[in-house]
Length: 75
Image (tube, rainbow, N blue to C red; front, side):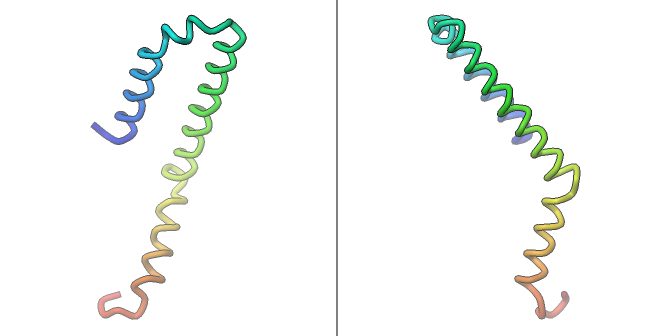
């Protein structure tokens, strides 16, 4: 399983395990928690698209490796 799938699985299990506690909270607190959780999920997905799909991560890694290993034979 990929790291992303493991992260999703952990989040779902955590939400499921804590659901009883969430139900004991007031409606406002529960709603606020779920809204903040949703914001984090959307922000994480947007960051993943920017970093991986957009190629930013690969460009940054390439730049770091090029600087680190510049001048070595075979580069």
